[in-house]
Length: 304
Image 1 (cartoon, helix red, strand yellow):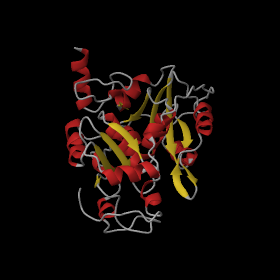
Image 2: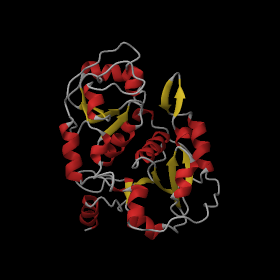
Image 3: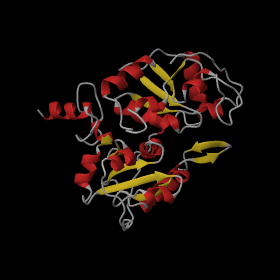
């Protein structure tokens, strides 16, 4: 009975069953997503930590959900060896999230700028650290919270430093050499998914600060914003629609999904949704920015 109820909730994208486990026969990880109703009912839970991910504190100050703590995007996505949006060292990440009050026992809810995109990058970061089992995105983010006229403001949370024991997951971070091997062998069981807009994927438009147009060979395009209902209501599309989108991009139930984009930001959202749907998922965070600077093969077609 619990599984049936959880499946129904999942189809409504409310995500209130479990803590990231596989809740139904399709292996949706329901604990990765919470609804605005859930957050409103649990705002005073002792273990709850709400994080607002933005480029500056102004965004969070203007629309603070009670108790939310600001985490700067620039602290979790740094430039390294000339490549933007790379993961910082694990010790730096641990110190950052501990300072925000996160412990292994915390129930972390993420929201932020760009319709949940920055929150998805924070989720990927926590997943790489091995501490995302109790982390979730707020479905619809601040946009839905405001549309429902839920309360905002109040004093910033008084933060008690957390304690994190990390269990790093390097397997979800695909490097350049591994990406070359995947693109060359093109196994049918691995879907390479490009999260950029369609015109950047096809090569009709060159991505910002990228020297060539096109995409990694054998990739399929799935622009991350197609996974949302709309910008006015940026909740995830229903499960069946999401599965169709990933299936059309080459994902198979027993296979692997590797996401990338221009520089590892947009692909964070495709990563999040692929994992939410139960796929074995990784991200090439160097993305096309790195790929295009190594004289590697580039394809130009319109598989969308």
